[in-house]
Amino acid sequence: MELTAGALERLVELALAEDVGDGDVTTEALVPADLRCSAQLFVEEPGVVCGVEVAGAVFRALDESVAVETLIADGTAVTGDALVAELEGPAQAVLTGERTALNLLGRLSGIATLTREYVDAVAGTGAIILDTRKTTPGLRALEKYAVRCGGGANHRAGLYDAVLVKENHLRVAGGIAPAVATLRARWAGPVEVEAETLDEVGEALAAGVERILLDNMSPATVAAAVELAGGRAELEASGGISLGNVRAYAETGVDFISIGALTHGARSLHVSLEVL
Image (cartoon, rainbow, N blue to C red; front, side):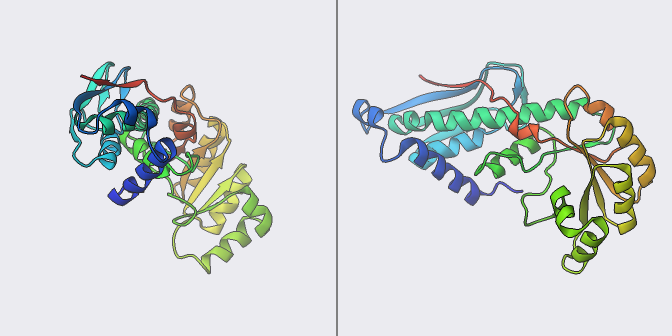
């Protein structure tokens, strides 16, 4: 899911509308419209920086004359208290955009940092860390971008670009075989089916699906599923996975590990802006 210039512009516009409304009454009352200032953006703790350009887009949306110099690129790991960007421009725009820019920088850096921890935990196994659709409404493009900055990969962007047959779909459709048969008549792309047991893995393999999501299985059961599949379908482990056990899942030979916590469980990093 690409973070296009148009998508970023729309997200920034919505974020500023939420915070600024019809005007920043404090800044407009205290700060002359012609006053200019310089400022610095900091990430104040160890982690993976993400969102510097996004923060810059916030200030430029308020006043296109704000100059932003990026000093540390997105995806870079820092040890703490790192100067990531310098700004110069109208003081009103800098002060009005401060909180929105910091919220986005801190949030995205937190997601990138947590993702990097998971990626590092499975290093050398060949397993790919994926995100999910458990994102903040309206911020999916940004949060999936942060996952990529952390070294992870994106699962489907939404309901529109990939087929994933979940438990409730199967209940409505009458099971794996009829669900897959119906989909093959209407969808030309790969089909992924959720399986909660090894028997369901066998059903999905018999139906010829391209990927199977192994839902809430133990590492031992996932390893058995890998052996059962024998390379006939890609396998994705999901559910109940944490930093403490992700290595065990990766060592089963599973292809993908999807983790909703990358986005819904990440803690924002501490960030700040200082006017000079």
